[in-house]
Image 1: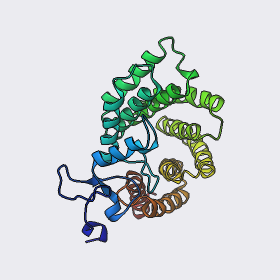
Image 2 (image 1 turned 120 degrees about the vertical axis):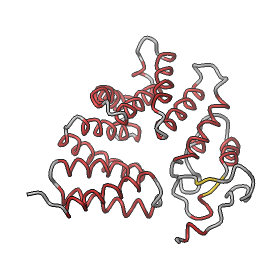
Image 3 (image 1 turned 45 degrees about the horizontal axis):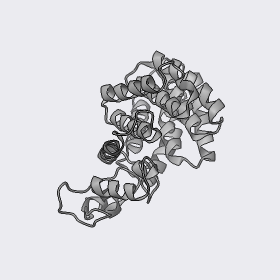
Image 4 (image 1 turned 135 degrees about the vertical axis):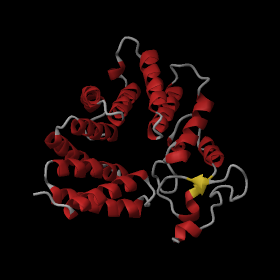
Length: 279
């Protein structure tokens, strides 16, 4: 049994470990006792930091990594309850609604996520001018991510190409949102069999994230980079990328983080390919 299995699961905020519902893992990069909290306690902390949507609703103040899993969804639902009665054109309401859809996407609730993003696009820009507004441009990028997750790669690539072009104009070429959209576009290209183009774009994405100190995104996009390298037959390079990123993800995010799990799965796949060579 590991050390993390034996640590107390008291809430890191209220220090209670018996009140129902019990504390849950935050899904961020924290370890041991610091990894557990009540959703309600995290929500109270976020609300205390300021009104409306802000970083405390989706990122851990201790390790600064985004929440995942049940904590991500619980906080997104709580924020939406607080913001949903505001006018539809309110910026805070839009961001809370978008955060909820992102959590639905991560949870595999694709229909609910798509319904939210479609509603935002229509209500904010019925004349299809969404590409001139940074927030709704982010919504469109998220919709492209959903198309990737549901294997609608042609729709994803078409939409994400537009998003990337506009984000370079509105946000700048090295802005974090631009870089993330470029990574999503590379995944759409991968789905469409454009492995060489995907590799080129992913190498740029990973290099660009270093300028933003966004190591979590760098690790996240290392997995599709390894996949594309493997598809091109560059197995040694794919294995090196996957193994290096997996080791760093385990140290930084923990072995139970979705990115760490994906990278370990990629490493296992590459190991099997080495064990069963084709001639």
